[in-house]
Image (tube, rainbow, N blue to C red):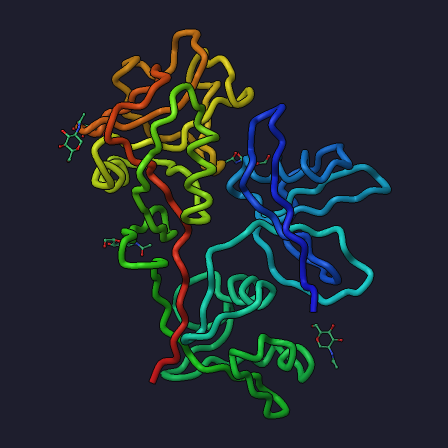
Length: 315
Ligand SMILES: *[C@@H]1O[C@H](CO)[C@@H](O)[C@H](O)[C@H]1NC(C)=O
Ligand SMILES: *[C@@H]1O[C@H](CO)[C@@H](O)[C@H](O)[C@H]1NC(C)=O
Ligand SMILES: *[C@@H]1O[C@H](CO)[C@@H](O)[C@H](O)[C@H]1NC(C)=O
Ligand SMILES: *[C@@H]1O[C@H](CO)[C@@H](O)[C@H](O)[C@H]1NC(C)=O
Ligand SMILES: *[C@@H]1O[C@H](CO)[C@@H](O)[C@H](O)[C@H]1NC(C)=O
């Protein structure tokens, strides 16, 4: 059965977002709050706007009114055979026990359990179960079957879980940053003169399904520094792949997160002089260099991917 179509963002003329993926849901409606609405009927332009804002979890593209509604704080996914205009951002893998779930169930569980306390949001927690009297027979039965929900005529009950985080393999490093967990992997950079950040990001994507790392604290800088000798990180120019960089306002993180930390040495004030931008790498000492076009020998790509969220039944 088809649940979704994957939309790969590849809008090279503007910001150069090429690998952030969204799933176009078929026969599902998504509920949540509106972040903003923009005028476009172009799915790529809409996806790019959502991809650039880390609060944007989904969007609704209306052909009739040529509007794109960016959505945040999702509350649910509802089966609706008439809908095919909702797109949701890829999320980190969700597992219940050792079961691999389809994307819709992963998304449903991720929306239901926005915190890690082991019960769906707003449910009553006891030692081994979670219950809700706000549900009815049909909403209880529509929960992902892997949760093993039961309905006794009055109350919907699911087992209580412990929530933990895991990486795709032991080669990755797990680290939590502002309440989210990520896995980091150093991938050897090929020797390729004059390539821009997008070339290296595509390699990260192929190897890890993630992107060049964004960095938001001195602690995260240290984690990334441990990945290799020189490390390419995910700073990009906002005005195209080989855009001119003229200051801090013309750079962004590829993953759309805010630019709230920096450790520049060349140039010391960050990318403040007019220059054609290729990439930023972190040198051995942890400082960042933005004004080169050839990588030093022994460079690693610092790849960052969302960790897998694992739910296990409390015994
Ligand atoms: C996302 O969009 C909202 C609404 O336009 C804005 O307030 C917020 O600052 C944006 N966040 C980022 C990370 O760009
Ligand atoms: C169950 O609850 C949902 C949402 O609250 C509602 O739309 C639906 O009509 C209810 N179904 C029954 C059988 O009461
Ligand atoms: C992240 O890890 C630190 C150190 O292990 C811990 O103190 C903190 O509670 C963790 N944060 C979250 C959101 O789990
Ligand atoms: C920048 O990196 C250097 C070398 O790792 C480190 O000593 C320094 O504390 C970092 N600066 C900031 C602001 O994190
Ligand atoms: C690259 O790494 C190897 C092995 O760690 C080392 O022998 C060599 O000197 C390094 N090359 C450069 C240019 O740093």
